[in-house]
Length: 240
Image 1 (cartoon, one colour):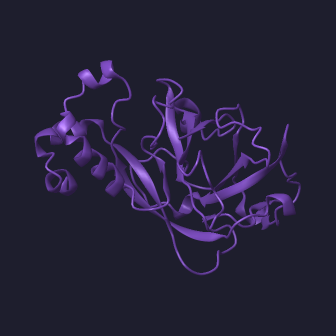
Image 2 (tube, rainbow, N blue to C red; image 1 turned 180 degrees about the horizontal axis):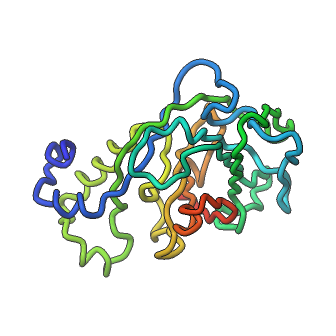
């Protein structure tokens, strides 16, 4: 609400409060990652029988892991315990596509005492590793992507820049969980449908050797019923 007032959007505060969603900010920190700690890049903590995932064009690359106990209590719908790990279908030739089924895979591990770090295969051992801190946040949706949707949007075009600043300042870190998808070049809403919820949104980063769609954003989605059940076996994705 402070940002809404500061950016000259106070006349829309009731509407923005109504459509706001909880999000969880991902903020990189210094130091070494603890075993089963939340982090981006590096070596994932996995069970002893874990087989490194493959896709038709090569190996998956580890994105990062979230220890769900690191998330402060709040109105989010993520499980309250265990660890979730994100991987994406890396390949040097660019044959994998952001929208491919299983472009992003997510594993959930409930028994942290059974996990240990495993170094990635050399071909997907890229970039640095960063421990992360998870903070409760808030998100509002992207500006409408079509003329018909924009016609129903109560915020004037002259305030579009202020609205963009609001979204940017709501997400000060490298990415976030939940909320709405963030994208800069897509001419459409990447959400697969009304039953889907944004899961992980992640920016490009040179140190971590991530470049999503020419330096934009990776966006991933989960069906709400699966999120409520803690089932991460089906993930949709896009980038832009």
